[in-house]
Length: 265
Image (cartoon, rainbow, N blue to C red; front, side):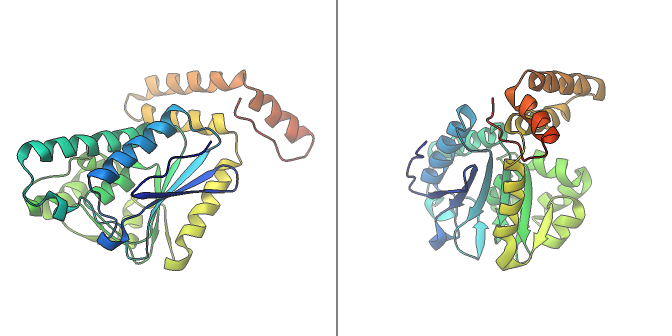
């Protein structure tokens, strides 16, 4: 499948199944303007509806200074209340559509991630970060608050008390602190971060794609409910794989001592 050419994003397929997406507004530290919001909403919607050959996504930022600086405040200068709300509706839809993407999405945070930039990373499945990266939800300094899921995703990652402190103080923190708190999976040397994220993505892409999708869905939705209901959801997800061609291929390849050739069927 040929992906669209976006004004604010750059896409490249690594190997057969890993899609690398770069937020591409380096002149403003990849800040999210209205067009980027539209581009992200369109892309996440396409990946949700039909990911085609894509089995894993790596999301990063252009340049080596910033993953994403958050909302573009220069564009927002002088906006009417109605225009602000209309723009934020686009941003909201993009954030929440990212949560629905069925394949794994790794945030490769190559630099600073502030405001909506950090919320975007938090909406991904997990985060690899450069050792130079700093992160913060700074919205209260502007008289607003996180509105892209940040109050919820940050609290789920680091706990209620620390999330309250970080958000209410608008406190910045390092990638190493984020790793200690469970927000970041791995801190990498700055020049190695993307390559390490790609190794992780290729590992996942080599596994059964239907199994990875069902496992992601089971974890994500199961954590929203009680343990017994979550386990029942897991079994339903598991049973959908029993009848798949990939399940037969996985067992066959194991017994034939060869790598499996999964088709996603």
